[in-house]
Length: 23
Image 1: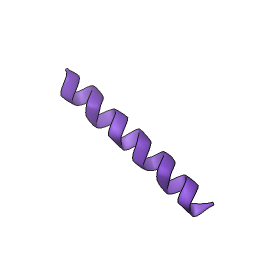
Image 2: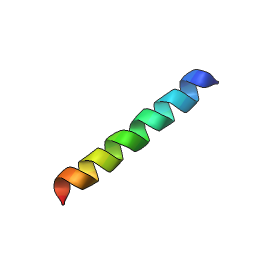
Image 3: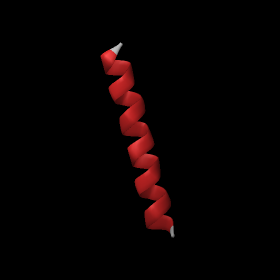
């Protein structure tokens, strides 16, 4: 569903941001 894809997208973006901040 769209909501499921949206959630996965948000989770991916958050993880990328966290990794960037960690570096």
